[in-house]
Length: 75
Image (cartoon, rainbow, N blue to C red; front, side, top):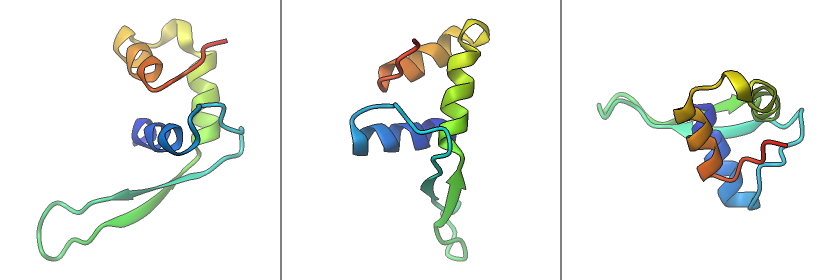
């Protein structure tokens, strides 16, 4: 979910210089049944981005590539 929030932020702002205290709201769709409507989730995106940067050496290559593709600056 945090990756989706990062994509949404990047598409809106054009960068991933997310303030540490920023909270991003994403809409999660239901499972397709009539009873399940989409709902909003608030994610602490700024903290998550900061943690990803600080843990860059231990992230999987796949995660590094996913974040790099949406504009992550590692330094």
